[in-house]
Length: 365
Image 1 (cartoon, rainbow, N blue to C red):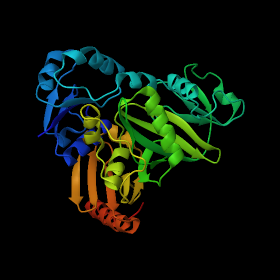
Image 2 (cartoon, rainbow, N blue to C red; image 1 turned 180 degrees about the horizontal axis):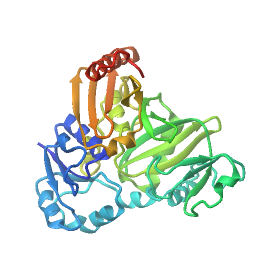
Image 3 (cartoon, one colour; image 1 turned 90 degrees about the vertical axis):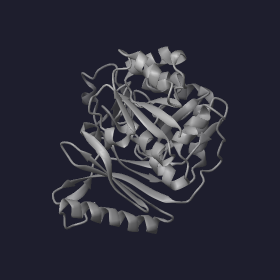
Image 4 (cartoon, rainbow, N blue to C red; image 1 turned 120 degrees about the vertical axis):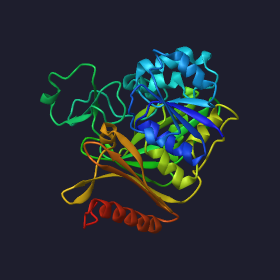
C-alpha cells in the first residue's frame, strides 16, 4: 500500500487525508500539536516539531512514498525546502511557485507580466477591496465604501477595486512540462468572504486557458489553485495558491472521478496528462452547516479550524457527513449524484440525519 506523510493537521490536511483514503493510500500525520484537528482521519500520528527534530521526519521519509506540507507556516515550508535533499522520498510541493503565490503583491506582478486580467490596484473610486499581502483566501479581507476608511490603513495591505460576481476556482496539477487543468467550481462565500459551500460549474474555456497559462509560465511541478471573479466585466484573477487547497478537490473528485492526491503523485513520477475538458457529469455539493435558532445554517470553513476534532459521522451511497466538535458543532455535508436531482435527494437525506441527531424538527438551510 502506498503511504503519504502530511505536515499539518487542519483543513488542508483533512482534504488530503480524505482523498488519500479514497485512493487506498495510508496516511501518516506529523503535527507539533498534541491534539490535531484531523487525528481521527489518519492511520498514524507522530507529534513533534520537524524544525526541532528533523531526524524524526527523515526516519518517516524512509517508510512513506511522499510528503505533503498542508500548512501555511512559512518557517515550516522554508525548513522543508532546506532539508528536502536529506529525505528518502519526494516532497510533493512546488517551493518556487509557492514563493510567488504566498505573496499577493508578488502574485499580481506575475499576473501583469503575462497579461492575466486582475482587479485594478489602488483605485481612486470606492468601494475598495482590502486584503493582507500574505494570507490565504478570505483571512483579513474587507470592503471599504469610502475614502475616509483608508485613513490609518496598514501600508502593507493591498487596496484593489471591488468587483462583484461569482467566485470561481480551478485546480491545476503540473509535472513541470505538462499541466492538467481539472474541474471548474463555484466558491460560495459569506459576508466575511469565508467559504461555506462549493458547487460545480460548467465548462469554462477562458478560465481554463488562463489557469493553464499561469501554471505553464511557472513551470509548475505540483498543485495550484486559481481563484477568480466571474464578473460582468469579464474574468479577473484574484489569486493563486501553490499548495493543496481545501473543499474544492472533494467536489472535483465526486464530479469527475479525478483524485488530486493520486494526480499529484503522478506529477512527481510518470507525469500528468493534460485535459481539454474535465471528464464526468456528476453533480456534488460540499457545504458546512451549524445549528442555530432551531435550524441548520451555513457557516464558513475557518470556524472548523477552531475545533478540536473533525471526523466521520455518516457514510452512505451519495452522501458523507463529517462532524467538527468544538465551541460549535459544525457538520460538513457532501452530497452527490449522477444528476442534480439525485444529488438533491441525497442532500435531503443528509439534512434529515443531522436534524434527527440534533433533535431539530425543521430541515432548515
